[in-house]
Length: 578
Image (cartoon, rainbow, N blue to C red):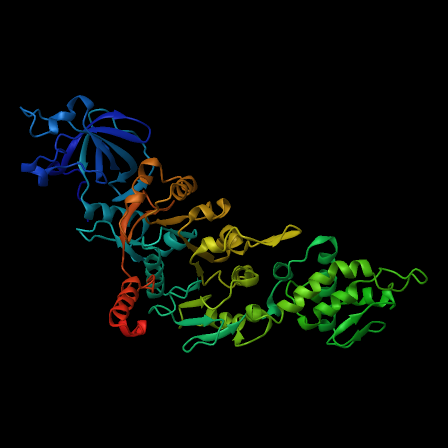
């Protein structure tokens, strides 16, 4: 069916009087809000318009309206004879209408000329043009929002346009960021997708789209899990233990290699190698058999995972603090190196404490079931679409949250590199991303960058693993990660640094469009992306099961306390009041 013409004479707005590379100036003769005709005025800031350039039509948006300085008093009703004002406006040029294909196309094949007419855009027609530009007939689409609150015209985007190039959801507190995440989960599951949400606060654990909740404490209704340290990489283990100086790092690595040898040989020492209480004894022992055993078991020893008994790691580090050879018999390992041992004492004490600490029980104390096994089962199960990993119970000490999330991200990327998601794409969502990205763990002697999600953003797409990063502080997201985000849902951002960060990371959002971001209503967002013909402001589709994003209950709590003071009685429990 042929699309209606975007040029409707009944919606005439004005005429182009000035043209630049990205904007045009337009006469707006009907923009004045006279009391007797306010409802008939046309040309308000934010209106979408079509510029009629003869053979082509250009979609634009009004970003400024004004009257010349010499006519400012003409709008004052009590200053004598009324002079009819002559308003003018500036229109940002966004995309070109392909009338033959009934779609919008990025870029401008030709620019408007002075004298071209400008018309208001019909919301339904504009929504259809956008839908045709991004989706083919019969494709699965996500209903992400409405293009106009009054008209209620839905905007549908195919999953490749939303998740295919990674997604960012930005917005200040109360702007609707959590609702957008819940909406994306809802639409993804309804269309047969699969996603894992990493939830720092636990606000998403009870929403309807979630099929499974993994928690690091024993909580009714949730699956109690731990991440087995044997599936942690050596780099992650270094991040946890933070070896410093020139001695601690090499000795930790040698200790890990020795303990891996114990596991690789099934706790039976090769000829000439001595084991004692689960560790390798080197002091005064022959060097040759040990290095021969390392060569024979090289494949297991160079595997990235830490497959060894970690309870022996402190003792093995002490056992590594020896001279490389004996002065009297160079074929043997030497005696104890007390200087090196003194340098490593702090590391030994730190490891001993950490592997027994309650804060790190999610890694070292093996309570609950293995998260690695549970994720494998979830990924293989077509009946489950959305899983949440809750970090609400994970402690902040020892940087446990950041390290654990980085370990999970690294594990998912390893699965992606194995080809697990090539034919079955997985979307991993991270809420409050500013708490985890761009962070480093360590001290002045050495630090480790927590870069798992940065690597997912850079290379995960080619393996079928894409991410959704939600944050209220875009300025804290590393620029190399921001540059990899294709589609952005930008809610209200009041901080200028945040707006500048989004603007610099997105070529489609110029200064004119960025001016609307601080004024967005709760639940309203600008959708931007290379696969979209233009930045589109929408009211996000409310999720049928919204997350629990409530803040402190000031009214109920304070009312309870006022009543207690008035009655000279203890305050009632807050749950009774709520």
